[in-house]
Length: 317
Image (cartoon, rainbow, N blue to C red; front, side, top):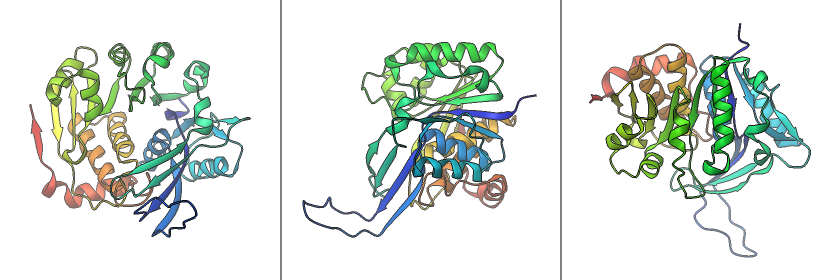
């Protein structure tokens, strides 16, 4: 028997959300803003919280500082029943912080990576991670840790685990083509539309999907306000987004990921997985903080029951 439904590997930090900042203060100047709020941040952490809210037993694997922010993140995880026994405590770095400015419009960020920078794929205890049925991993950095990702994925697959990955933005700008070799080891491979175009070199999503289908049989691409699309076993399925009043788009993609993977792990078909993902993404943007608005299982089902038949549009090719 496995101890966890899912183990999530990646970044966890504090998000300080600043709302209503219209200009950067000049030297010696003080500017008052509409609000500042503090939340758990980091794509992996937001995914973990969103998945736990949907009722799965989740463990988190990352690195936090031995400081007030690190304790805060642990306490928030515990509130949602997330196991923190796999988290390491840094002896040298403080917990990471991101300041998110104007999340309701064009977001800007100031980030201190902190303890997140100490997470090394090659140093993970795979026997501990294998306590989970499924592993979701973030933090792929292209050429910089490609071999470590391949080695980890191969061993976890040999241990009988299922795997998912959100490839994330390539801050090096290289868009390393080795990512296609990595795809073969993952049961679900997620990215957004811009990332798909950068990696494949195409500027139409179906061309990108058909190219990637030769490397992976289950690819999911988030299309922002257009919804999302998946290609599984050569079949493309679209699902349009649900209308949402946007307050803060932080973590919307991570919330979508959680909804989709929740559907996948509970045996739903691709169309239902896309629906779950789009519901979670839509509810996420309705509140400040990356996971504040994400639903629990009852909230997910209630949203679908109330709105699903009226505002869902399906297209298949």
